[in-house]
Image 1: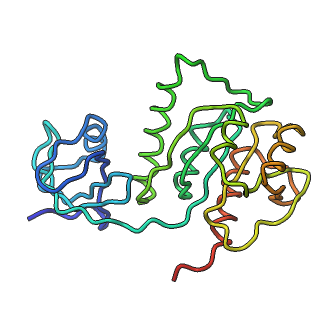
Image 2 (image 1 turned 90 degrees about the vertical axis):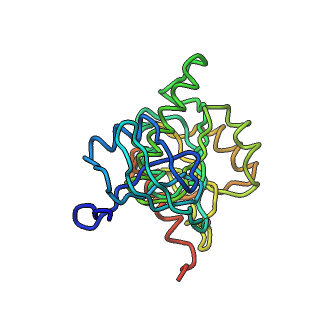
Length: 237
């Protein structure tokens, strides 16, 4: 018989290819199992970041192996997509965006971006961000990992976007309309978007929007924008 986790909480572990039967988890999951002191016979939950969860029981620790029940699909909901002028605190912002159910994060090489990625480091940095999203999804008990896109010129990012969305301006704008939980949202880097970048977004079809009367740091602006957007959606009850 499997043992319940402390306080009734079930430990969660990420598996990229989730399937019923015996599964050996990767080194990241094994390290997390050691940190939380998982033991033989423990009941755990596995998730794949693509909307599926499964109950499992720990069979072995070396290697970390589980007996997995049939995965269950979780419904996908309307979720906002984030366009982000590459900021300094990218790990913090990526974690928050994952917790707030962002569908994707498209990084922009904005004129005022302080953080710059060398092409040789792109794959390494994206993998690091992917680990951040996995950990954030594990802790928040979410089901879907956001898609991550390396920094690209604004014109390229807008070519992926619908001809409707919002960019946030510290100097004013409209409120987000109700029912926009799947909206595309653009938040600038430290210093904000330039007037030229704002103009390009407006010509693409994006609307200027406000996050209130005060000037927000990038990480605060992202959290506020996502929270307002999700709160504006009709009730799912």
